[in-house]
Length: 133
Image (tube, rainbow, N blue to C red; front, side, top):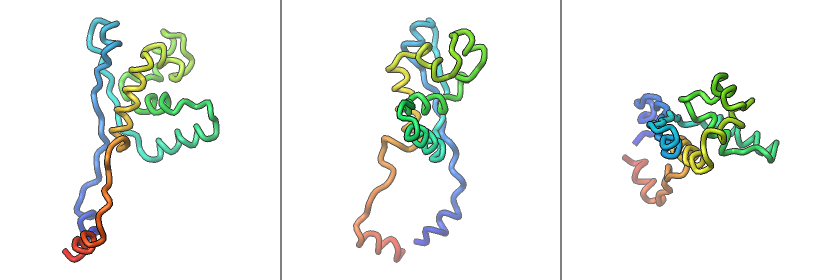
């Protein structure tokens, strides 16, 4: 099997998104509150980790959630003003409880390929067999 040929026949992968109903927020609002989240790229995750390395007080989970939430826009001026929050980092805990923030973080991480098995080591004999085909 020629892996290069196989890769050249594939289309570029599409970025994944999910709709997430936040149960506690929905209960407070008395209607379904659904956030749209997206996967983060390797570079986006790396930038967050670099930021945390340079500033130990950086909350990695909050930054992942803020970058991964597509709708609603957590940077919306009306939303920030309504909750008296100068930044999305300060806004998020005024809207969501800790468990909801953590759940969104976990979902975004899964969409981004983390917290799941994404590769498998194969025995050398099997690798040789694949190369021959």
